[in-house]
Image 1 (cartoon, rainbow, N blue to C red):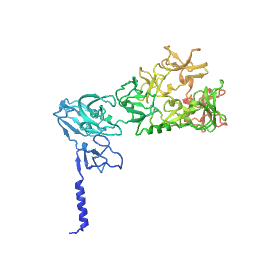
Image 2: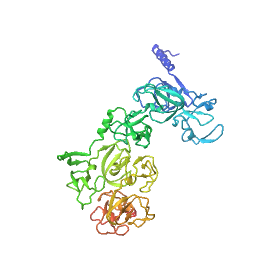
Image 3: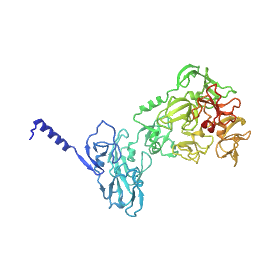
Image 4: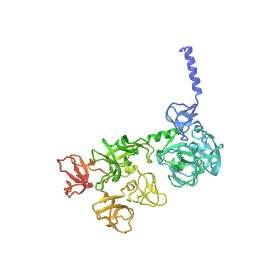
Length: 582
């Protein structure tokens, strides 16, 4: 028999004592490995979530050291059956049974124990109390469809988070409904109260963020349980009334009456960011004030910059008050016509509206809570109006490029084509009243009637020139005629859709026929598109003379692609069949 020294014996005894002190359980929903009790919270490692209630894990809890499975101690010790539960007295004799959440990819179909009516497992995914999907195991009645999450069956008696509210919230079980003082909506059965402040709230509303930066407003907004000194206010998202005696988010800036419902502003997580300290609001405002003017070289007596260096151009730009009437120039930032107050280059044909020059370099656009950055591109497709454009763009988040015309549109607007104001609805998937196209990513819609517009129609020029008429054609929003035709292409025109017209000459035409396929591209830009010519092609809106198209042989007049080599006579129409197939 092998002898052991005294130190080895002591070490073995310590290990045996340590193993006995570690509490382990075998849970029926995780039979692969035992779960070990973790009594104290560790500051190291990544955040984990309970596989029972889905909430952030905190000690004491049980965890599997072999795989990523965790349970709060309360969730791990939840009984497998709850007879006579007060929340479901109808079938209290049958009891609640703890069930494992079905796999999303299962094709199982369950049936009611009484009527044998079959139903898909999707109807078992919502808790009848909090209306949230089951994150993990849940309690279900064996006789009907009544299901509740583990957290709702065994709610915490006290919730305290001083970063959200200065006093603790205590549970109050109810037999009837209540109105939450934090969000203003109805709740059932379980509420939490702050006796100090006389508040009654949903369980989730005990942890509402105090300050958030919402993408659709320039300033930080603060959660308040009631608002003083204001008259009737409408939510700036859904445009329904905000009860001033119930919880809402409002702007902290003096004189700014921006107010929104709690559930409206927190509905989409990608549209807001939680601000932990109020001083962060000032830092965000400073960041958004970074100018795209690199250097002011000269100012006038009024302190106005009259000579500058701008990030978009290599030469200095000079301020001017008006453009000569016989010169048709477009802004190189937004590609819209220039009339007055603009900057121009003394060395080359480069022009910018004063408003385009003064745009911030970094901006939080209302479409997304992440910062957007200004940049210049000679040929880029805007992801919002779907136009290929030259000029300034904002890079929004990681996936969107927004042209300057779209970037200047606010989320709440007035439009000449409609009598009511419009607001952007991210969920709107119906047709645009301007062009008739179906929206896939939301649209500006009216809160009072069925009217909506997409970015493309909202950013159309209000007037345009075309050789069909000696006058400027104006953007027109309706036509009383039952049958209408385009005076350019001579084809049918839908009278219910927007078009350009001249009231003096009774001329009317399709928008695309007047503006062309690429109204916002600058002449001379390299056309990035498929073609079989061995040199790069450049885009030109007009062409001198009437050269023949190298593909179809017809005469070229407007919107052509020309070889960049001066010795090459290659030229084609900027029509789909010519530019794509040759």
